[in-house]
Length: 302
Image (cartoon, rainbow, N blue to C red; front, side):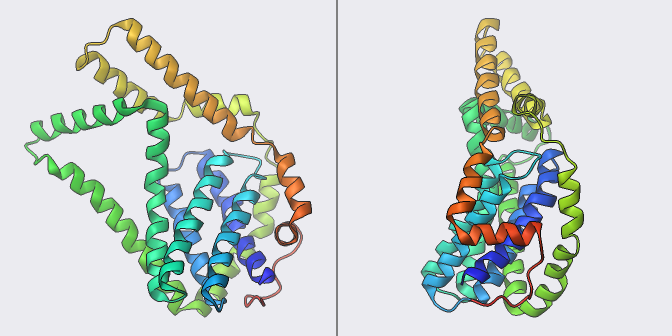
């Protein structure tokens, strides 16, 4: 069981620490959705190698937690945000397995729940930074666009629901692919991950970790952050008729809260992770596999 967890945590960590760090660092759109699909595929594969419901739930959560911890070792990008996403997605996946067991139905429910977190987490942070004003402003903007284009108002909600349904369909397709064709996935996709292991690690080692203060300031200039603030301020001026002082205070609060959150996300103490490596042998073994050698077999023993 320990070898199983270590093997699949290694695979997911290589993608998260390598590709995930670059995608998050350069703010590539929809990167979180792509990485969540990868996690769903790997967890589905891991479930193939377990026997009991308890084993499956333990493996799914252990793989996700270990990957989340190892993500904190990445020298670039945020740490805690991806850690939260990876951990929550693993937990949501395990709910499906817990309810229906280690079978295709459990996989489909689990990966469907997993896929929803990529939508929930950004909304939670947006509410934390901007409050309800951002959502009211977005609604107001859509109402005006719909009126000028003569579109039914409900089209906006239908589009959002459509994106969610599309993500669930893609996720279920990944689960079926991973469940029905485990050998092909293991030999082709997983082998390719390990093929580029050394290149990924070497490129990351050459990256100089960004200072938490500088990184937080850079995050404040994220296009989504600027557009959201601009939209909210426009709403306050045109709709709420707010005066300059109210706008200044609101903007100052948004920037202060966002900067504090971004700083904490980047300043996560890696010394905690080093202590965890000494306490948990499975985690230490996974680190060894990532930085020293590839797993010996595509069929891990447990």
